Image 1 (cartoon, rainbow, N blue to C red):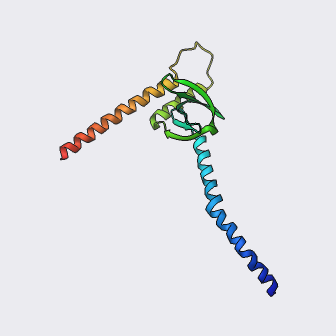
Image 2 (cartoon, rainbow, N blue to C red):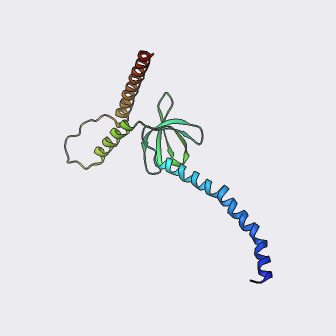
Image 3 (cartoon, one colour):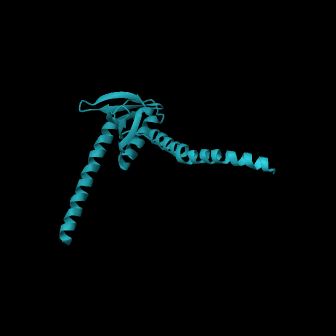
Length: 153
């Protein structure tokens, strides 16, 4: 290389370093954050408690491709909103209750022979009943742990 070419390269070197630093300090972390948010929104399930970007707090009662139905307030008002409007998940549905809901959902989707229709419990009601059952079990476990701790002391 000639001295002139080296001088030109040295002039552009700070600019190249600046672009690389900006990429690693600004662009890359933002892309990771966006990916995590999109994964969270794709993973929304019935029973999750969410906060929207507008500050509405509610529980998901139904999911669709691009929208979710959220139950809000003591009156249990249901609102349909876009998935992108979810800011964060405050409480995820319990594992066992989620599994039961998934089983019920699969049963509803499987094709059946034509027969007399029987009324089924609403999957959301089943889910809420299981959630209450899990809370009672957790409460009993805490009481048992406290009793064991008292015995050790």
